[in-house]
Image 1 (cartoon, one colour):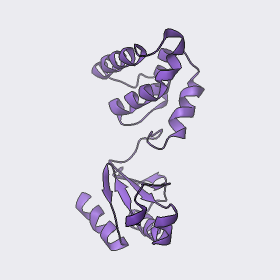
Image 2 (cartoon, rainbow, N blue to C red; image 1 turned 90 degrees about the vertical axis):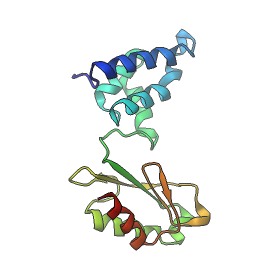
Image 3 (cartoon, rainbow, N blue to C red; image 1 turned 90 degrees about the horizontal axis):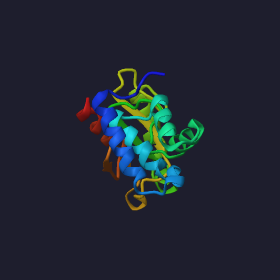
Image 4 (cartoon, rainbow, N blue to C red; image 1 turned 120 degrees about the vertical axis):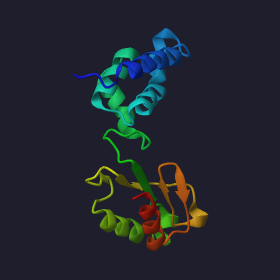
Length: 163
């Protein structure tokens, strides 16, 4: 399988893994899993299968263990995301305040379903379990920027600024 990193990234990965592993006993390398997966994502923007193999090799675990972690946590991308990742909260407070309509409107606007990336690779739209903003629902997050009390029109205006 092809290497996921260029030479500079590989050096940074190796140094980062060495630093992570130095924090755990040698027989507990698996404890560095979250940090190792995060490191791969920081270096290439997502966690490709080749990156999972590198983590598995360094931590001396089966690739399936890395896959379990990478697919369990929403903050890890096992498919290359768009430039902008839009997380729409659909938990109960946001739902009661119109989050489903917000999500449906964004799906129509971007011509994708939740969990997909636009054809131009610019936007990835996702349904989020909770963004911790019940008092200002509905809300969404674009990459690390949080937006609250949104109407569909306001959300579309946010997207227009990114286009």
